[in-house]
Image 1 (cartoon, rainbow, N blue to C red):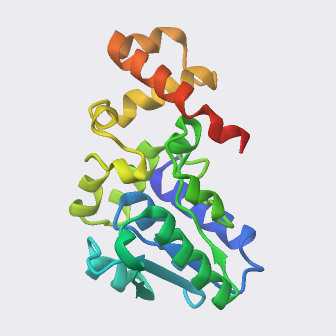
Image 2 (cartoon, helix red, strand yellow):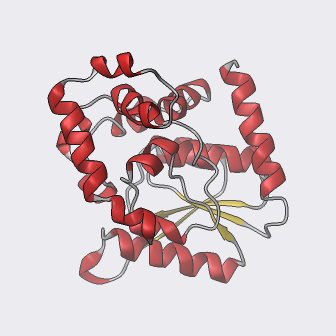
Length: 213
């Protein structure tokens, strides 16, 4: 399937699944996942989609504002950048708007377990079946700025992306995950080093508890 057709298919699914939503609130972080998520929701529902950023500086702000309606909020107290506090604000805003809170967790994060616990508050996860590599391709196709794309390749411990994980390309991470979902053969695993395989196995074990919550 071509990138354009895949994008159209995702937009069509959003139109179908979220057609009964009064409003869609998309937390926008300035990363590639939230950029794609916001774009898809705006394409499907341009008048009822709101992008919401917590903080003063939004990476690629001009692009987001060009795509659709953006609003900004501050998180309280000393925990200004604490993810739980941001999501509390997102949830509060959504309740006031009678809206669905749209999370941008992708399939790679979902299977690896690197999503935040706070993201479980989301009403709808339109990217949960989309691999990170596909997210990046789709973002390039719709013209997401490089500064946003590059942010996905840097460490961000607050978002579950420590330096050790960033040093393993998302293509290799997906090979590791696809082996367990039986989407690739065992011989593909040889593209990962012994260290990379061990690290990913340990990571999955450490955060497996999320699957039972």
